[in-house]
Structure formats: C-alpha cells, structure tokens
Length: 69
Length: 266
Image (cartoon, rainbow over all chains, first blue to last red; front, side, top):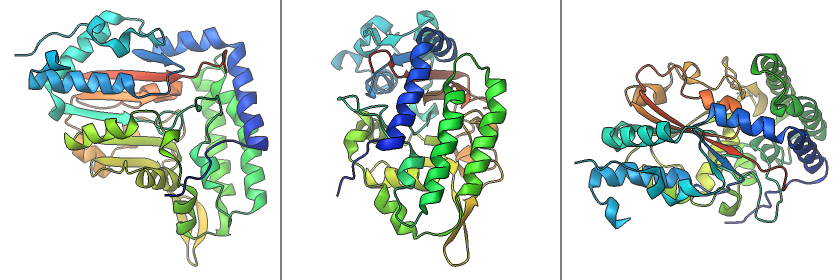
C-alpha cells in the first residue's frame, strides 16, 4: 500500500500550532478538566497500551490466566 | 472464580503519564467489567487524535479527517480555504478551557453547519476519498491493530463515533485493516446528488464534538446491537468525548479514558 504523508503543512500546521498555543496557556486548567471528565487521563501517550491492558485483564480474568500475563 | 485486580498490578496504569484522580473507582470499575465478562463489553471511541495519534515521535502533528478528505484533487481550492478559515475561527473556541461547554455549543453548531454548506456543489469521485485515506499505520496509535484484533476476535462491538467526515474515517479504517465486522462508524457522511455532486452532510443529526452521546445513536443498527451491553470503555481526546456513553439505558460500568496532548513539551 502506498503511504501518503499524514502530516500538516503550511496553514494547516500554523492552525495546529496556534491551537497548541491556546492550550499551552491553559495547560493546568485543561489537565484538571480532563481529570474531572475522564477516569483515566493519558498525557502525551501515543499508544493503546492502557486500553489493551484493561481489555486483557477483563478477558484474562474470565479465562483465569492472569498469572500468565 | 474471578480474581480481584489491583491497579498496581497493571504496569500501563502505573506510568507517570497515566493520571487517575480516583484510583479506587477505576479499580472497582475494571473488576466489575471483568466480572461481567467480554460478552457484556463494548468500546466507544473517537477517531481523530484518539485512534489516530496526536503527533508522531518527532513531534509532527497529525491531520484530522477533514484535512485528509480535502486532499482529494477534485475539491475546489476555495472550499479548502473556507474550511481552514473556519478551523482558525472555531478551533480555539473548542479547546479553550476557560469557555464552558454550553458556550462552546453554539459555536460548534455554526462550525459544522458552515462546513456542511461549504462541502457542496462540486463533483467528487468516491475513489478519490479512498485514495486520500491511504495512510501509514504508524499514524495510528501504537497497538491499535492489536486492540481491534483482540476485540474483533472476541466479537466485542466497537463504535467509532466521530465528529469528522465519516467517508474518510471509514476509508482509513478499511485501508489500515481495522474494519472488523464488529466495527461501526457513526459520523458525518457526505450526501450526494445526481451526477456525483457532493451536497453537504447526509444527516439530520449533525455530529459535532459536543453532541456525541447515545441519544445520537438511537435508531442506528449499532444501537440495536449493543443497547443491552452493560460495560463500556469510552476513549476520546476532547472533553465532549467523555459523554459518548451518556444516555445508555443499561450501561452500569462506564470507564472513560482521555488522551491529553502534552502541549508544554510540544
């Protein structure tokens, strides 16, 4: 499969950085809001490690093989 | 016999990047969901910056489904410029933590309504959307194929609930082999007129970032399939995503996972 670049350019990049600046000024405010809204907040985590771990434990509990994980 | 899980025994939940305000509640939720079993489980996930990454390892930010859609060569440049102007106007409102969700709501409705009007009146071959959606799997969160495969094999329904463009979201899921039979996409799909002319979004219930909840799902095939499942994992990157399971009549265990970009180090 041909992989098309999946990044921002020119104005798109500017718009994203502008968005980042908005957030940067309110970083702590946003973290508090996220901690109030979500049970688990993943800060700058670009993986599915946490959802996978939770699903694994839900399934493995039923399978009774948690100790093998 | 179900063994009780301790959060301390799940390494991924012990990382510094993982913030849990009420650990006892989360521990109880996970144990309750484990006791209910995978046959009672469903996953509801946002797409942009949730299934897709927020940025690559080198800090390069990702595109939303709107921007990926606008790669289609047949889209007039004026439409792209209009879309970017709308983004510049409304995106800061969406992410401004000082503005209440109630105050953001009218702005989001304006944004999506104007976008729908903008995506209108030009011919577009659906094959262009498929082509534009050919992205590298590295652009998705690490472990996404494994998560979808695990849930797919268990026949756990996955709802990809997106305020983006459904045609592009579905195309990306197909191109990256994530479209398992149990995956459903509820989003803003394009409406077409005769002659392959795009005519805005095909929905009377426009989905924007602050109305994504189960009331928007009523009457859909997905709702019929999962409405009796009691355990829901919700994933999103926007505060509005936290309410995606709101309105579920039987869900008794809802675990919400939020992805917050670390803008300080970005």
